[in-house]
Amino acid sequence: MEVRGELVLVCILGVLICSCNFFMVSEAVWLNLPASGTKCVSEEIHNNVVVLADYVVVSDNHSHIPTISVKVTSPYGNNLHLKENVTQGQFAFTTHEAGSYLACFWVDGHVQGSGDVSVNIDWKTGIAAKDWDLVARKEKIEGVELELRKLEGAVEAIHENLLYLKTREAELRFVSEVTNTRVALFSLMSLGVCIAVSALQVWHLKRYFQKKKLI
Amino acid sequence: MGIALKGYFVVLLLALLSSPEAVFGIRFVIDREECFSHDVKYEGDTVHVSFVIVKVDSSWHYSDDGVDLVVKGPSGDQIHDFRDKISEKIDFVAHQKGVHRFCFTNKSPYHETIDFDVHVGHFSYYDEHAKDEHFQPLMEQISKLEEALYNIQFEQHWLEAQTDRQAIINDAMSRRTIHKALFESAALVGASVLQVYLLRRLFERKLGMSRV
Image (cartoon, rainbow over all chains, first blue to last red):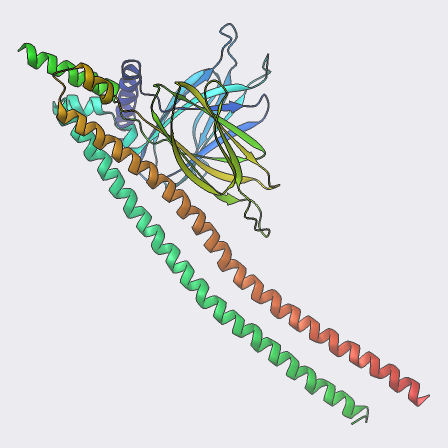
């Protein structure tokens, strides 16, 4: 089952790479890597979401392209992808836990020239990572119907997101109300402690003065 | 047959030109300065940018300082400049195509986690409308709808980042009430013990002197 899933993912990736040249879609951001040290980017991803990412080292100097290393980790620390000494690559996975997924880049060896390396990262999650070519071929739809399908997918993603935001807001409200009760409770507790301690003080001093025959 | 074929090619062309530009969104930890670049492919595209400071890596010091964001065009001209903002959402029309730079500067001594999102909306049908007689109005409407939906997704991502920030602040506030109450009680008990001790010492000295 897992092997089949992997195979499907590889196929999707293959089609995506082929279609990339044809469709010129690149919603990618360029990251500046310093000559030493690691740069990490992360994203909060829900459970069961497909993630596809592409990274390319951008360099003006075509004779020597600096190489980088990539490491992608899941929220629980599992290594999802590790590549060293590459100038470009892709990774794809389906999330099994909700949380913050981290992708770290660092420059290998020493870099000639200015010392700043630019990496072009194209990171797609969820609905953006869906392979519409595959869907079009499988269900034999095209043109307007395909576009409407895409819109339907986008609307579903928006709806899901909205429901998630609703649950987050409910959690926030709960914590706010708990904090409200806590503030009241602990203020009373503080006041109670103050009164008790001062009563204790008075009692102790009275006993002390009586013992020393001052009162 | 010829018209249908032409229609099909128009649809294909539109599908190619008005490729859905998905929402991007990344989170990163900023130390002093961090720069990102993004390639805007067509002149006249609307660029939507948003950022939210999700958390500040300092446990007790709460500061309201934000970060600075400078947006520069491909030729180095400054398009936008924001100072000390915690969260911001803007859009502007790109007057030149090319690589735009977004540079964040952090002036506080603590590391901050920032959620940054950039989304470029491309209206290709404005160009096509003048040229092609057989332009399908349906595809035009669909493109507009697509654009609106991607805008909604962009806004939702910003809202999600804001909610995250509020959740972190709320949790911190909840913990702080408990810590405050405990420290206060401890301070009160400590102060009264000190009082009793000082009074006893004072009277013992007085007693000692009067007896002698």
